[in-house]
Amino acid sequence: MNDALRQKIALLPDSPGCYLMKDKGEIIYVGKAFNLANRVRGYFGAQPHSMKVQAMVDRVDDFDVILAATNLEALLLESNLIKLHRPYYNIKLMDDKHYPYIRISVNEPFPRLTVARRVEPDGARYFGPYYGTSAIRQVTGILRRTFPLRTCSLKFPLGKSRRPCINYEMGQCLGPCAGLVTEEEYQVLVDEVIAFLKGRYKPVVERLEGEMAQAVRELQFERAAELRDSIRDIRGLMEQQNALQASGVDQDVVALAQDGLDAMAQVLFIRGGKMLEAQAFSLPREGGEPQSEVLDAFLQQFYEDRVPAREVVAQASADPETLEAWLRGRRGGAVTLTVPRRGDKRKLVDNALQNARDALQKRNAREQVVKERTVGASRELAAALNLQDVPRRIEGFDISNTQGAQSVASMVVFLDGEPARREYRRFRIKTVEGANDFASMNEVVLRRLKRAQLAQGAWPLPDLMLIDGGPEQLAFALRARDSLGLSVPMFGLAKRLEEIYLPDEKEPILLDRHSPALHLVQRVRDEAHRFAVTHHRGLRGKASIRSRLEEVPGIGPARRRALLAAFRSVKGVMEQDTESLARVPGMSLPAARALYEALHGGEAQDA
Image (cartoon, rainbow, N blue to C red; front, side, top):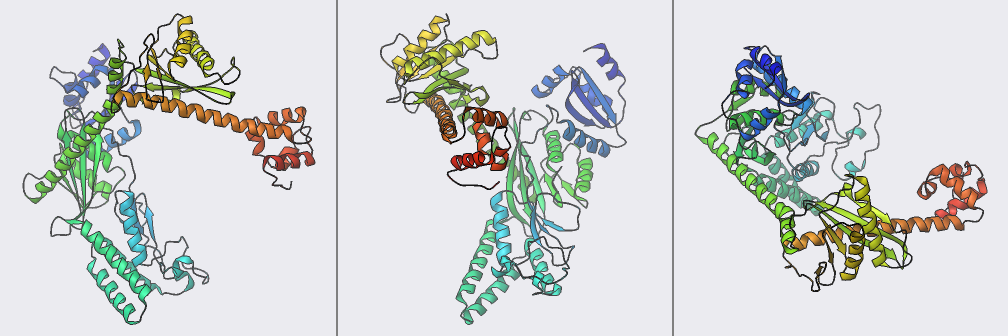
């Protein structure tokens, strides 16, 4: 601890506020405290910290404080500072989506039904949020089939009636724009939609059943079938919503599972006493932090762009009174924050906790599978090839040509078993004529390794090189390596039986077809082949266009040079119209028309 830091700690005030921990001027953590002196001094005392906090403290060389009048003001300030600076050691909510709401513009004549990503203070009614695209599609689909509210952006009242759009013809709008419904009749439907979205389904089903029976009596069987389908969809939606309790309450239930390294927050969304959705949120590096503090920080981020339910039921909270006041501000109305110890609400928390543990376990299992396919596969490959070190950087090479024309090579890079696409490189074969993949491979490997010697870090030497092909391709690649006095490990991979050929080994190695190591080398080989073929196809296409450019009557070398100078490439020439082509120095309007027709398959264009 430097002297300036000690002096700042000694002068800390005994008041609420926020503190900003810094490392070389960068803000790495923002926190709030009711008593800044006690809280900040605690970081630099002798008491032990969690791994995350200790790692943060080890980096701190300075801090700032911002005083606040109350604890709630400090909480609001902390939320804004985290959003502004996004410090590394603060909780990072990994799901940053804006979930959709159903919006009904009750503040305008003939209210319309739309989907909105944010709740705005515009006087409209919002229902949701709906978590997942399938949920919002299902609900809006039912609404538009059952309640024909308008979805257009027309501003009412209109100056005069107009012809209704196709939605009216499809039975999905009552046609207020054409004067086919009064405001009073339309408002009855709006009220029914709002009741439906609040969970009162039975009156809607009863109305639809009556209409279906009437349609059958009038022999309108197509209309009766449409009503039957709407009733089925509504009942299906009702069955999916598991009733949790008798009272029609709106609740968000939040719990946290931790495994010592990471954490998983789970939110259950209950509306009208029915659970509509459950969502898990990964919180990296929060597995060893105090549960109540992690939950408080999570709730602040979670409700930064969402409206909380009338009641938030949380597993724990470090400062429930302050957080409840903050939630009221976010909702613009009454909110109750409950931390239950027993009873039905505790059962809801236990349900959320069980879901959180399950989600964390599944996430860890997925990460373990990814690790086995990447780092674990690299270890297994090192053992199979008898390498001293596990290869972190594996490079794969492939050659592509068409009967010796337009020969190209690809170099793909995998770091710790994952493709590093920014490191990929393409090569045009310069010294080899005709279809000679062996010599082409020699040239490419030689150029790549020379670049490593010259670039000094920009092109680091690989830990392992995969040569697409059998022992012959490998032999030519080894000659290039040995000529530079290097000892980078190499192997060849033949396609027929996926044989691995090693230098100075006559017999190939055959890995188990279920082996992660084999899957890794296959991915590297396939990616190198894809990258080479893609580049080769592009060159063939450009060559074809260039040949068409050269075959156009009246477009000689001088005009070709002028066109390429003006538009930078053959593709740029193709994107121009005849007027732009004619403006190029040395071009004429007839020549421009002839060129346009040649490049666009005879399709002429007037200047």
